[in-house]
Structure formats: structure tokens, C-alpha cells
Amino acid sequence: MVVVKSRNEKNIASERSLLDELDLMSCMDGIPHGILIMDSSQRVVVMNRYLEALVGYDRGDVCGVKAGFVLRCNFQQRNNPFDEVILSGKSAVLEGDIINQGRKKIPVRFTLSALVPSPESVAGVLVVVEDISLLKDLDEKAHGFPGLNRVIGQSSKMMELFDLLPMVARTDASVLITGETGTGKDFIAEAIHKASKRAKHSFIKVNCGALPETLLESELFGHVRGAFTGADRDKPGLFRLAEGGTIFLTEIGDLPLPLQVKLLTVLDDKEFFPVGGSKKVLVDVRIIAATHRDLASYVKQGKFREDLFYRLNVLCLHLPSLRERGDDVRLLLDHFLRDFCRRLEKNISGFSASVISRLSSYHYPGNVRELRNVVEYAVNMCQGGIVEMEHLPAAILAEKKDDAVLPYPSEETGSERSAPPVAVPQPSPPDGPQGWKEMEKKMILDALVKARGKRTRAAELLGWGRSTLWRKIKTYGLT
Amino acid sequence: MGSHEGSHEQKAKMKILITVTEKDVAPRFDLANEIVVAKSEDGKISGRPRTILLPRPSAEELCGLILKEGVSLVVCGGIEENHCSYLTWKKVKVIDSVIGPYQDALIAACNGDLLPGAIFFKRE
Image 1 (cartoon, rainbow over the protein chains, first blue to last red):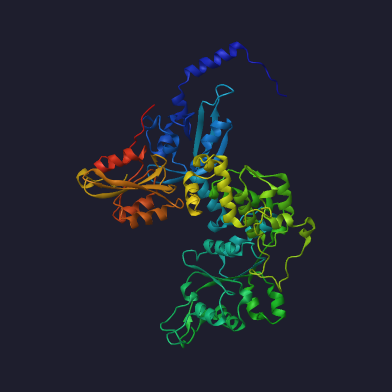
Image 2 (image 1 turned 60 degrees about the vertical axis):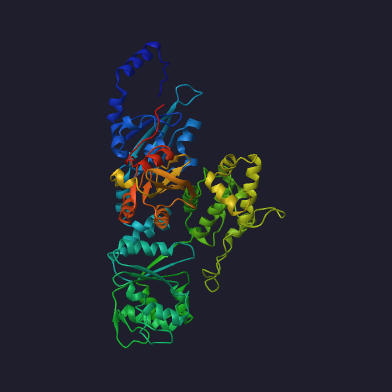
């Protein structure tokens, strides 16, 4: 049970006398985190010894200097969180990095609290700076997968996959990664390589569907001088370039049958003949293959060699589609929103309830890649603090809810290139501007009209920097 | 700190580049999207300093621009060791951790008085 007592005058007096007796500086110096107090014009009032050591400036030298110049954090000028805290009086916690006088970039966590002596005014901001470089290192070590930070997921299917990866990385066996387009097969392949003992050597990615058969053979296995017209010198080929490392064969389902035989030889004997060559080349390369096609059915149809399929399919990792990942959609939406807000220097706090509902029920034929593009489009279109329905691509808005049960294009017809394109932005009314450039031009003009020609104000309205607006005005010839 | 040599050498002809934000030296080299390039001769600024808006903040691209422009002295705020070492290796002097109005820093650099970690702000 909580009992709330009104503080009597005696209590208040004793608290005051205690505060008077305490030496604020000694208290601050005893805290094992950087502490800085700035006034409402963001000038340094005081900072503790820990922060002195962290940033490399003496507090006596920087007293009165703007805190941003002392902390040298990676906040952009227009999204300065100190401004936000002073304006709103609300606290904020955010991660970033600083560059200290020793020229070291240090990851830090800032906790900003407004100093509010009276309800109507903010006197300054208390900044607590925690050095989180150790935490970041531990995080990487715990994951054991330096490249896995690009794959995000908390659903049971993704967790099962993450559990498998350390084992897959430890072995040297061939890996086959399957999964629909846009599920992150490339990232997983690279993460496996980075966590393997071959990490010090090359990771070479080859798209088997991107080149004609003859060219692909020469690219993969190299050729000797005079092997064909135009072969005026020896070419080592990608297998030899990947010596000691990993070769990632993406779209392996599109590998022509004659090359499948040659690949089988490499897998079995670790050796091959370059095009036109008479001398065998020995290689030590791990093969990771990926495809969005159903290789088993390809084998049945005679499009893919059965022996190669079994040789590649030693370790098989299947990446679930976004539809199977449940709450990961929400997680990814938030992740990409933060990512694009940072890149585009926007200050968007989230999605409206209707947008979340729509995006959670959408079927994402292009999976994570499509979701990422939808968020990028929305962040570009949104000029306020919340992404609303009108900021979504037209194709998502036009999609009926019952389309969520539409099947993904069959393996026969579906391919990376034939996958349904990500919603083409057509948000404007029929008489409105067409295309992003026209839209941006119109946005600039509207902002300039609203700001009565004042560029600084127009830039603020657009959420851009003065220099960005100036550059775009010049690009579009609006001067 | 930054490579700083005798003022006699610095007072000779040189091309100075300062990373700026509004009227101040930009707090970070890697996040600067505006630079000022000035020429100096015998401790005085010769000609009008040029302001260049960069397409995007990038330390690597800025290093490339510095070499392309034939800059001999870079004045900046915080800079990472690898970028500073690269510029020094390419025979470009770097005076870093400078705080204050870029014009004050430019004048001091021309005079050969600018030191790494210099603070030009007036106390209020």
C-alpha cells in the first residue's frame, strides 16, 4: 500500500539544508557516467570529470561553449534532441556516437532530462552520457555473427534459424539456402561466411542467372589465353579468386545444365579445368548456394541435376516468408522507420493505427525487401510526425483485404525479376504532379509559398536542412 | 593532436579548407555538409573564400575532395584517427578539435597561430 503524505515545511527545510551542504561538483564527479548540464541556450554550465576524460576537454575551457561542439555527437543539426527536450520539457534516451579529442569514435547512450524549476520554463538540460562501447563489443561476441545485425527477427521461425547458424558456420560443408525473393538469403550467406574460419578470405557472390552460359563458365572457372576469340590473356575465374574463402552462388536454380556438371566436379574433387585449359586447377573454396525456386521439383522436371542437388543440399536453411513471421512485421516496420528517418533526417515518431493494421495484414509478395521499400516511400511522403494512410504507396492502398490470401506466384512463373513490383508511387490526384521529381518540386514550391519565400522557414517546413533545400532548388531550376 | 609545424612555413602560400556549419567550424568532419576553401599568402587571405555545399556528409568523399582541390591545411572539429592519418599521409596538415567561428579559425590559420583544440568562443 502506498501512502502519500504531504510534505511539511520542516521536511522541505531539512532537504534544502542538505542540498546546500552537498557539493554538487563532488557528487557529479563521483558518478561513473559522463554528466553535463547545459542552459536553455545549450551552453555548457558544468560537466563532471568522467565526461572530461571521455570527450578530452577540460571543463574550465568549455564552460559557456555550445554543448554540441563539445560532445560532437552524430545528431543532425535540425533533429537536435536538445532542442526537443528544451521545447517539450520531456526526457529522452537515445544512442549515438561521439568523436573525442583523441580522434576515437565512441558509441554512447544519452539520457536527456529537462531541468524544470517552474512549470512554465525549462532552465536547461541534464545530459548523462554512458560509454556503451563494451556493451556493443559484447553484443557482437554474443551473437557470434558480425554480419547478422542486418537480419532482424524475433519470430520462432527466425529464432530457429539463428540457432542453426553457429553450427552451419563451424562446418565446411556446402549450404543450400532457400526462401522466397526478398527474404534475406544474401545476408544469411554473408553472415555464415563472416562467422566461419574462412572469414579472413574472400566472399564472392555470383548470380548464376545473370550471365549467359558461355560467359558464366569463363567467369566462374576462368580461361586460358586463346581459349576463344578475344581471350587475349589468362583469366583466373571467380573460383580461384575465392581461394580459401567462400563462393556464394545465388539463383543456383538458373545454372545451365552443362555448368551443373562442372560444378559437381568442383564439389567432389575440388578441382576443375579452366575454359580451354589442359591443366587442372585445385581450389579450396566453400560453396554456399541459394535459390528461390523449388529445386526438388526442378530435379523431377529434369531441369536440375539430382546428384548436384544432393551434393549442395548437405545443409539446408529455409528462410521463412514474411507472412510466416507474425509479429516480425511490426518489428521490421519500426526498424526501417528508424533507419530511414535517420538517413532522410526526418522526425517521424511512428505509424497510425490504421497504417499498422493495413501493413500487418498485407501479404508482402516481395517479403522484407518490399516492406523496406514501402517504409522508405512512406517516410519520403510523410511531412508530419506520424505516417498516415495517405503516405502509403497506392498499390498497398488499392489492395483489398481479401487479397491477403492470394497465393504467392508459383515457382514456375515467379522469379526475382518477375516478382510483383513494389508498389509504384502514384499518390497524387489525377490532376496532380506525376513522379517523385514533380512531387518534390511541388512540395518545395508549396513550402516556399507557405514560408512567404523565406528559405530557412521553408526548409524547416520540409524537414530539410537549408543547404539541402538550396541544392534542390538549384537542381529543379526554381531560382 | 594535429600536425602543427612552425608558423614560418604556414605563413607561406597555402590552400586552407575548413569544415563549417552555419558560421562555425563543424563539430564533426564526417558529418560536415559545407566547407570553405580559402587561399592565403604571407599570412593574409588572398581572394574570396569559396563556400562549397557537399551533396552529402561523407568523410571519405571529403578526403577525396581535399586531395582533388590540392588543399594543404584542413581545419576541422572532431575527426576520426583513420581519416586524419590518411590526410597526413597524403601530406595534408590537419588542425582538428577547433571550436568557434570559422572566420576566426581561418585568420588564425593564415597567421600560423592556430593550434589543435583551439576554442574561439567568447564566454557569456
